[in-house]
Image 1 (tube, rainbow, N blue to C red):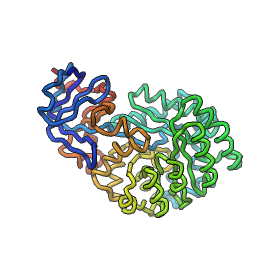
Image 2: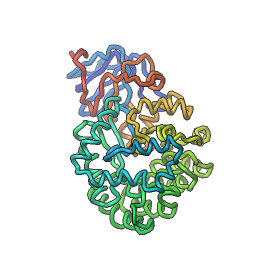
Image 3: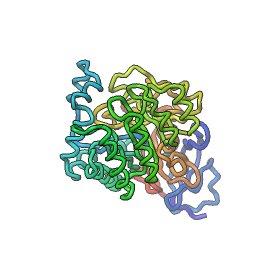
Image 4: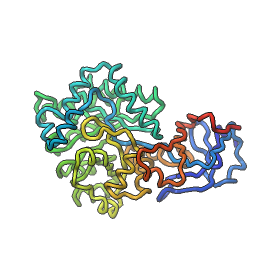
Length: 407
């Protein structure tokens, strides 16, 4: 059987099935951008590779997937960081006209070229740590032209940087200054969502359901509009208070409910029944100095899938390191090593609705890989400020260092 590339002398973190699915001394092959063989050394005798790569004992995992980011924006909010250090809360900053709205002003003023220029370094930082797929939300435009601009820049940066970008429309991120919440919600539902769907600019619709943002009734309206236009739904839920948003989202078959520090038992049960993924965001928990932990033990007990993400954004999580986010997930939320790695691969793919295509090393999956100079999988979670990435592979095309032997 002809294959394009075969990696041998490698250890595989397949994430196929339960746990990490480790294969020590394994082989992996791809053809036409997809994985066609995964197995132990010696299982590849029937394969005829165009390129054979000696992995020199390195580890291969699925490419990392960051399933919750707000990566495309202009400006920064370092001044708000200083305010929080002086004791001002996130909610107080938002009510005073800061927070999301301050980033909206800067993003609206930026040209697409300026927006790309400011956002590109953040995406490259993610790529440098093995990210092959990233979700990027809009939500800093809050008008149809500016939301469109964000999504278009996100897609263009993905193509330029060889990172698969999954776009999410988050028009219901904040109520624009001078607008009434219900009036703006109507515009999101009746104008923006149909246009974004018709133009194919997003796969899903998100909403920030919180007492400083959109009510559960307004979130329901957003979900109904998304579904009517053929888009999946997600939610920012229970970050600052329990609005029962996760329970509502689960009733709409939401891909994920994100943050969820204040999630209750009813929300957990609804998510478990719907298969809605819990996306945990330790960067925001850390940066805002939150003290309410997500109900990890109850989520585990209910069988709710657990994903991790950076929540990269200018106000509450200016984080572009998935490896640090894994460490935070372990140290702050007491996730296991297996949960942290799965959270940035298999479960992150599920949170994006792409679990059949990415996030595992299995036959038929896209050949998106991260290749690591580590002694064991735990090194990805244990080390701080350490980037052991050796190479990335996107749809079978490697970024190979010259030191690799190709025969």
